[in-house]
Length: 157
Image 1 (cartoon, rainbow, N blue to C red):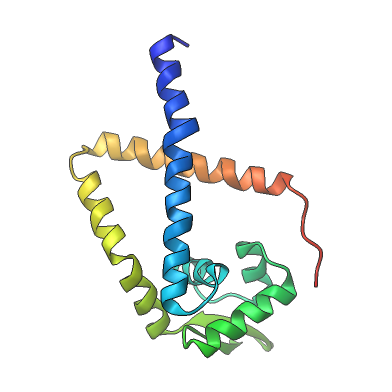
Image 2: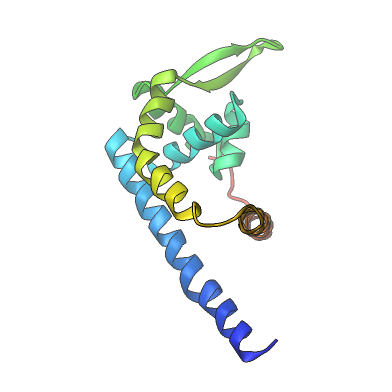
């Protein structure tokens, strides 16, 4: 790898991406504070918005919480009016957690400014560049998920 490329990769890996990650964590904290919930609760709402209704166990796994912590998270989100418990239409013995329209609207409103700014930042890029960015983000997501799987699993409460 030539020096210029090495410097670019180092700038991305050591500065740009970690700086962005820290900003996202801080934004999620601010959104959680605005909604009156914990940061993991905001992550849960993102998961539900992307994947649809889920069991408490599936949410615990997606958000990286123990089942007991996930249960408390769901209780907070129900109290905040962001989610509700519904019977699973495929197995009435199971409960699914689904976002409420108000919960999704509140989270969407909290991130609306970032979405607008991101769309504006992406506007100058042509389709090929956007495909490259998307490929990188998906790869980074896979890498991060793989790294998470290498870490010890928390014990159940």
